[in-house]
Length: 357
Image 1 (spheres, rainbow, N blue to C red):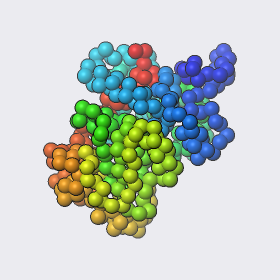
Image 2: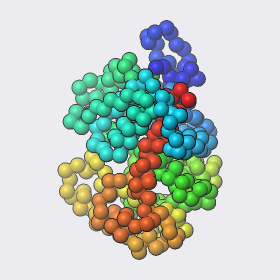
Image 3: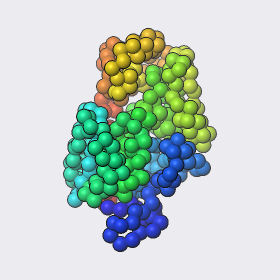
Image 4: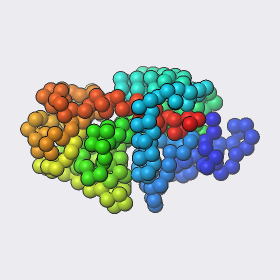
């Protein structure tokens, strides 16, 4: 299945010539240069049929809002979309273990009439047995979409550059766009509107934080990142989000001060040590626990935010570390709504990129 014609510069008959893809017309650049180029100028790219989703940073506010409208429609009644992916195969490449990502994608694909093919790369990473390029060039002959959960964002970029079928980032070391889409949709459900809302992320400035920052600053949602010094999001992501915030009217705050939770409508946290981060290094884990302990989400910390502020977590949670039971099991916790909405948001994404609707 070739990329959308809107992104094709030249196209020969058969599969001998590879058309240009959305967001991948900068081959030969370093990943950092490619990322910078993708954020330059206006952020008006849409989720056109056949395009990739490696990060949210290039999407417009209208594009995400349209996706949320479709998410709401599919969640309310999936029956009109039962055949949206008829005859389409989606391969799921997972270097990291998963509960929510695997099940939400696999069940969603099946509900939409597609075929999900799971490939476990936990013991042999992509690029070890054969090059990522060759791997992608094989897959594009058999499937209509690649969903990849990988250690390195550069692997996704290489795969997207090589493949003519859409590549969806199901998590990398840099970004987790599907999670952030589900998170913002969940907040929209909770509050009815995202206007004048503020979200606080407290903890490690990791991939989840990066994508949440992108989503918030595109949508005009205030974003406060509270993290110990030295654990802030990457400077390049902060720069991107400052530019996005200037367009949307969002406010972006990066701080180590927990008092900045005042006025926030939601408090979001994640594990202090991500999968593959400091693997086998007990010293790194101990160091992080010492640094992050003051940032544990407790009832006292939640009291700094607005009354009835929602608690959010992408899961899995390490209870007693980044959050205590009294918070994650409380009535303001919406963590399982987030988990459910992973499937609905991803379903909408698949319909946008592949569906016949």
